[in-house]
Amino acid sequence: DDICLAIASAGDNALAMLANNPSKVIAIDLNPAQIFCLELRVAAYKALEYHELLEFMGVKISEDRLKYYHQCRKFLTKSARSFWDEKQEAVKKHGIGGVGKFEHYFRIFNKWILPLAHSKASIDNLLSPKSIEERERFFDHVWNTWRWRLLVRLFFSKTVMGKIGRDPAFFTYVGGSLSNHVFSKIKHGMRTLNPAENHYLHWILNGTYGEALPFSLRRENYEKIRKNLDKIEWHVMSIEDFSERCKQDNTKISKYNLSNVFEYMSEENYLSALSKLIDISQPGARFLYWNMMVPRSCPSALKNRLKSHIKLAKNLHVKDKAIFYNNLIIEEAL
Image (cartoon, rainbow, N blue to C red; front, side, top):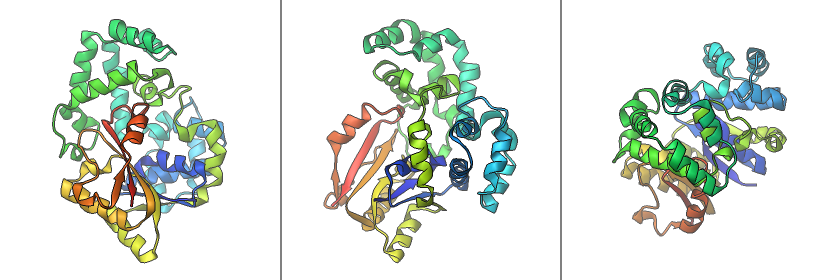
């Protein structure tokens, strides 16, 4: 029964929130392209059966993606139609889950870079089920070669990622070595966590999820999400503008999925944005967000308005399949 706010980010997490039957999910993003991605995903849940959704997303091989697009197209706004009409070839080739800049970045990695270090057999071996002892032994003695270490440090540098991967604005407040950070996180994901169950690692290394699907694409969640599609809305909007709108409408939010949006802000702007969100929160509202390389958590100026759930966040973070993040932050409005 919660009213939830999610940073849209193409829509997978916002859609996942529908599975727990909220009162409403409001997705916002400053980038219209992310909103168009969410809009097409919503249309896909409306128009397509489960196996068709997986094909359309790019999870399964398909010759019918353009047919599926035209089934979904009637549910799109004029702006979204115009956006996606120009990307039909990419949709046909990769599915709608594979047309983004970051997905293209990882396609370059698994097609051209990764084969310089590891064979397809080694990749399949890494992604096969193993005990933690077997995973550690395989990583240490088979996977972690000097070529692998060199390629990770080159390909995941700020320079390369800023050119063909992430928005360069992400690095404005980043200190330290990005490639060293990525290497340590990949190591954790391959040794400590189970790569066989990690859809992110499957996508990065193979260009497809295989059987390790994200929450929003699992069969058991398909009907739950589909029946709640009338409860999601989306807007191209900043956090600040959204907060003002909620004040005018007297809307109170109880759950926040804020991705790593605060890493793109200065400390001053982070404090201001978080404060505005607390203003529109129900007592006990939960805030969830990630830090990758820029530390952001309960500013001292807000200690009397926020409670940090440090132990809970740490316990969840060590199991987090989104391996690149350094910290998971969970806070509660007082």
